[in-house]
Amino acid sequence: MKRLSTFLIILFFGLQSFSQEYNPVVSNVINSVDLDSLTMWLRNISGEDPVIINGVEETIDHRVDSWGNDLAMEYIADVLESYGLEPTIDNYNANGKNVYATQLGTTYPDQYYMICAHYDAVDYYCADDNGSGTAAVFEAVRILTQMSFEYSIIYALWDQEEIGLVGSGNYAQNASNMGMDILGVINMDMIAYDSDNDMVAEIHRNSASNTVELSNYLVAIDEIYEIPVVPEVQYPGATASDHSRFWNFGYAAVLMIEEYFGGNFNPYYHTENDRIDICNLDYFHGMSQLAIGTLSSLASPVSFGTGVNEQFAGSPLILGNYPNPFSGQTTVTYELTNSSDLNLQLVNSQGSTVQTLVNGLQNAGKHHYEINVNELPKGIYFLVGTTQRGSQTHKLVVQ
Ligand SMILES: [Zn+2]
Figure 1 (cartoon, rainbow, N blue to C red):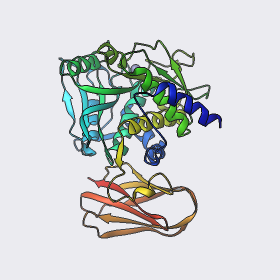
Figure 2: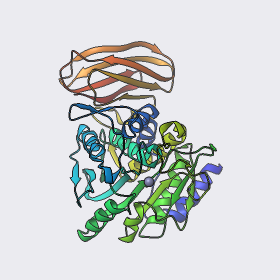
Figure 3: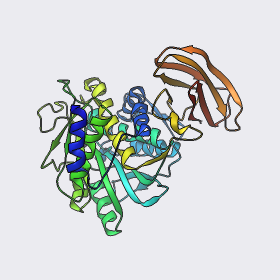
Figure 4: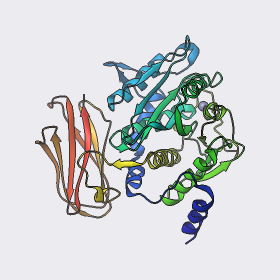
């Protein structure tokens, strides 16, 4: 009852401009935010593991502007492209390069919701600041590009935040000059440090445009979908990250950050000791769920990928894989809310079964299944999972 009444109060007093109710598709999105996948993105962008960039194995040792962070920029562009987006590399000054891409909305293509983070850094690794926000944008790309939305979504990674919010400032100024109708901006900067395990998610706002409603919306999403982070709205919010450049031009924007005002801030901030091993991965997972779930709800999902039964969205079977796109090997994940018979097949783009992965009774919970596709031609494949409740489809890209 408490949950419901809190929600109703928020609904009546906070959400005049953004209405919402429980949506099983949004719930499915939140459940699809995968910690293994997030961990992979974070390790890749913060130089713990090598990545393939333009067919060559490279390690992104650092993302420091004055040393040149082109490797990170190229990797970001590759990731966006591999999910079917057309990234813009915006070389707005001699050293600065923003990378962003738009997923067009089906009903309101000229109205935008944005998820963003800065990717530049001040030292080696810098996992929390801000590999974490960058990784969460990648996870949003991985999940949301499989879906369609009424509103357009902009995925943006800013450069030169650390030397004065330069990349985002340039973008916001241009957007304002062009009269772009950006309805809300979710900026993530340092979303993976929580040493006291209180799971506090600070949401920084001011009162530009509908920022109050946007911040209330995040709080309501957290409640409705029972996301395991605890939002604390900070007003007046910090201006020391990219969202404040959007405030400057009258756009609704919020900052999601660990306890910056609350006193549990990353002590390894801006040093080479800011690595994944000092991060709280469950907290990082919850922060990412809140950001991506909120974005998906705001952008109004119209379907969940190809060939998915609408009534099936939101529960009994969740399919995924990581990495994706991939070559050689990938790990398929499937999660069942109840123990049930499952038939899981890998199907090519002509609809022919390439391999039957699972056929039989499976326990409830999350399962992992390694597949090797060395003999398969490059291209698009689907995982098709069928239970007595219906079928669920997930797209894989072999590259
Ligand atoms: Zn930062």
